[in-house]
Every structure is written in C-alpha cells, then in structure tokens.
Image (cartoon, rainbow, N blue to C red; front, side, top):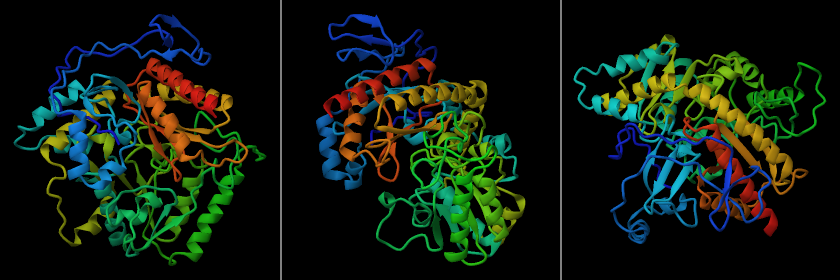
Length: 504
C-alpha cells in the first residue's frame, strides 16, 4: 500500500493561503498536448483525462532514491510491508495537501482512498496543523474535556490510539456488563487485527492460523447484491442494485430472509445469553456492503432479547462521511449501546475512542485499566480541531453532495459496462463491485482488477480495493474533494474500463 501522508502535524509545507480548485467541465488532453472540452463518457481512445489544476506547490524532494528505499524495504522491513504494497510500480509519496498527494518525482495524484478513510478533512489541513502545534504545549489538558463534550451524547468516553484498541476495549466492557461471553459479527466484517478483534473480523486475508477471538461467531452478511436475497429497493443509498424486486410496498422480503439467518445463528451457534453484536453501519474492508434498510433495527431487537448489547463500529463511517448523518448508525434509525471510532477523528493522527452509557461504563470500574498514550494532549488537540473543521468547513454536507453525484454517475458507468456489477454506498463511503458479467455476479479476477487499478493510478488517481475476493474498488477520499474532482475521476475510471474492455 502506498505510504499516506496525513499530516495534521506532518510535513513543513507552507499551506496558509494555498488552495487547490478547478472550475468547469471535465477536460481531456490529446497526445500532442492540445486541450479540448469533451464529454466525460465519450472520449476518443487517444484522449487522456486532464487533472484539475492546483496552485499549491510542494517542496522539492531531496531524499534518497526510490531504488534505495525499495532496497531497504526488501532487506530490512517485514515481508508484510511488501505484501500490502498495492501497485506493481509503488508510489513513493513525498507530500500531501488536502485531497492531493505528490510523489518523490513531483507527480500529483488525486487521493480517493485517504489511507483507508483515515484522512477526513484533508492532508495537512492548515487549521488542524495550528491546533496540533498548540496541543504540544498544553499544560492542563484543556482539549480533553472539549473533545468529550463535542459529540459524546451517550455519556461516557474512553480514549484509545486506534480502532483495534477501541474494539478490543468494547469487547471487554460488553462481557463485563452483561456477564455473558459470546459476540456476533457479520461475515466479511473487519474490526481490527489484534488477537481479540481478529475473532470479530471475518475475512480470511486478515486471519492467521493461531488461536484468537475466542467466543466470536460470524453470521451471514445481509448483502443484497452478492447474497442470496436482494432487490431493487433494499438499501438506504442513492443507487440500488439491478436485481429484480417483487416485494409489496413497505415490505422487504430480503430483510426477512436475512433476519431468519440471524435467528438461526442464535439458536445453533451461541448460548441462550450473549454479550454483544458488532456491526459496521456500512462494511468497509468488506467492500462498502450495505444491508436492507430495517435490518439493524430488527437485529438489535433480537440481540437485546438475548441479553446482549449492540455495538456500532464507526471507525470508517463516522464523522459525517456518509453525508446524511454524522454517524452511520443514524441512517438505520437505531441507537447502539456502544460506539467505537478512530481514523477520521484524528485525520491521520493516532486516535480512537469508545463511547457508551454510564451504566455500561460503571461495570468497567471493577478493575484498573489505563492506556499510556490514549487521550494524550496532542491527540486530543488534533481530534478537537478535526471536529471543529468538519463543522466549520461544511464537510458533512460536501460528503453528501459530492458523494451522491459520484454514485449517480458511477451508476451510469455500471449500465455501460458489463463488468460493473454494483455501485453502492452513502456520501463518500462508496464501493464499485466488479464482476465477470452481470448475470453470474462472479468476481472479476485479481489480474483484471489489478490491471484497471494500475491504469487508474497511472492517470493520476489513487483508489482502494476490498471485498472478500478483492473484487470491489473502494472510494473513500478526504471529505474536502469537489464535484470537479469527482468528474475527473469518473473520466479516468471510464477511460481505464474502456482500455480493459478493448484488450479483452
């Protein structure tokens, strides 16, 4: 995976007064360099999309060569470092600003992955940098209470360094409070890579052949595109599946079927009393998978009948990313007993949290727990400034408006290309699932995914991949991107699909 520079406290770039903007429709440049206005979806084969201009100037890179960096990585770094490098030709990032990244050669990229939805308000956001610097001199830790009061409507918050730590802590608290042990999650979920959260995670790529996650059970994911049931009205999304739907108005047969699967899990795979149910409002690593609209309401009821508490993992969906709401769970009209969060709260700085009720928190006081770096003054200063920036910049509304436009236009590409099976998501949490063909819904092979992925990168856009079979392109940019940035990506993606289909 490319190295992401998130930099609320990062590089020395002078960012005050700089901006990156673009107005007008998508442009394409011809091989000879002439610029012309073209339709975003009807360009000649020889045309290449032209990147929106940006008046920020990165510092000149003066470090070691790419060859030397690669040599050190191969010789001294864990083999895992090489395994998670996505590209055949790795991108060595030197500097970032808002939605843009520059590599060591000065090549600019539009970042549409944001370090797996980590960079929320933009790389090296100037306001955040000032606040972070101020946090380094805080004597009485005044940023901690401001952070606690900002969005903690449920009552009690515990600060951690990451999402895995937050979910680890949530597991412990759920078991202490309920007196029960077993926890249920969805297949395809990702809740962390620690020994405990590895049990919550249900994706073979993130598991090791060692004992982990005792007491964790995975139930069927209510995926209305790839799952056995689904229709054309199931999701709370601007774009629905292309599956047929014969449901009566106001009734979702797919939801009923998936709830029956959860009931079967409850009567076959766990004791009569359970500790908790973990659910991402929209699956992240699983490929932006969405559930039927009422599923979480019905699921929460079943879990609570068994003595369990309901936990919303908002590590990727929180902080306005879904557009309609600040928290992803609000789109399901549910109120969880506990919320875990990380990533976007720190805009790249290590920060996470668990928010829960006073009653659940009280059960946790039976022993002593502390986190050496959780909630340190600098982290709280950064998180506080991120929350301020989200509010002051209108970030949540931008996620809704740009994300809805992006999904609506991606749906047109789905109708144009046989290899796009599904477009889904909310706000700037988007998945594009690739298939061999729409009839079979079989995942597009890895070599084909990699070819398109590399082509998109070579034209100046960085996106992610996910899904159980690596078949879904994940689009989770910094939430400061513009509609024109989205149009540029749409032109690039269209071009890359056109290139692939011509070869095929």
